Image (cartoon, rainbow, N blue to C red; front, top):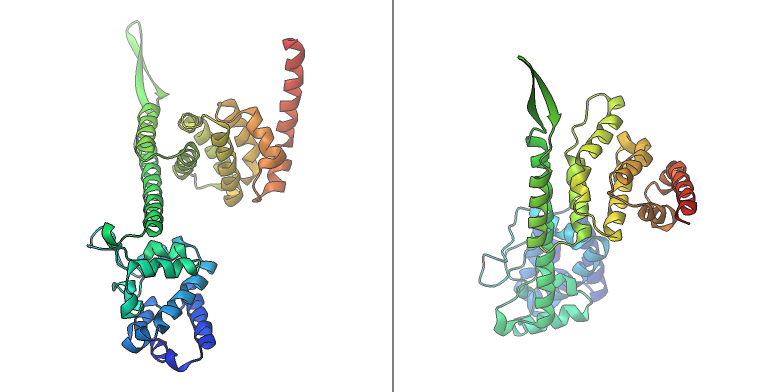
Length: 343
C-alpha cells in the first residue's frame, strides 16, 4: 500500500482525495499500519503539494470517524512515545514517523504560520495537537492555545487515573478491622469492630483534586469508579447483590465527602445508572442502591426526583425508572406527611 502512495501524482485530484479517505478509514479501523504514510515524504510529492493535500483529507476523514483519543491510542499501540517534553521542538507524534510534519509541506511553506493557517482553513484545528510547534518566536496563538488545552486534558486524565488507582489500593490493601479487648473481672473478651481508613482516603482525594484543579463532578466520577473497582466480588452469582450493597454501605462516606452540590449528586446518579446497566450482577438492585445512597446522605430527594423526571441517561432508562417508582412514591408520601406537621 505504501508503494501506491508514491504514485499519487499520476492520479486525478478527485481520485487522490478518494484514496486518502480510503486510507483514513483503514487506519482508523487499524487494518493497516500508519507507517505506510512515510511514502508521502518523497520529494516529488512534497514539492507538488500532493503530500499536504493527501494528509489534509486523511486527517479530516479520520477525525470524523474517530476521536483524538482514538488517534492517541493508535500512537501508543504503535510504540511511539510522546516527544513533546523531550525535544527542542514538538515533533509529529503520528505512528508513521518521528519526522516533522512540516516535511509534508513544500520547502517554501515550512513555517508554523502557514501550517496553522492551512489546517485552520480546513477546519482541522484539533489536528494541531499532534503537530510541531517551535519556541515562542515561531509560535502561533491559536496553536499554542490548542496545545495547552490538549496537554491540560492529558494531565487531567492522568490525574484521575492516579487518584482512582490510589483509592482502590487503599481500600483493597488496608484491613478495615481492629481488635478490641473487653475486660470483665478476671476474664477478657476479644471482639472485632469495623474501622475503615476514611480520613486517610478522603484527605488524599482532596489533596490531589485540589492540586490538579479537578471539578466536583470530575472528582465524584473518579471516586465512584474507584469504589466500584474495589468491590470484592464473591464467586457465587447469588451473593453478588449483597456484596455490592455491603460495599456501598461501608464506603459511601468517601463518596459523600466529595459531593456538595446538585451537580455532584447528579453525577452519582448517572454513574450508578451506567454501572447497574453495564454490570448484570447489580441490574436488579438499582433502586436499592439509590435508597441506600439517600439514607447515607450521598444524594438528596431533589436529585432523585430530578433524575426520575428528566435527568436519567438513555442507558436502561425505562428499566430503572420503572424499578425506582415505589421509592419515588414513598418520597412523595413522606413529603405530604411532613407538610401538616410544619404547618
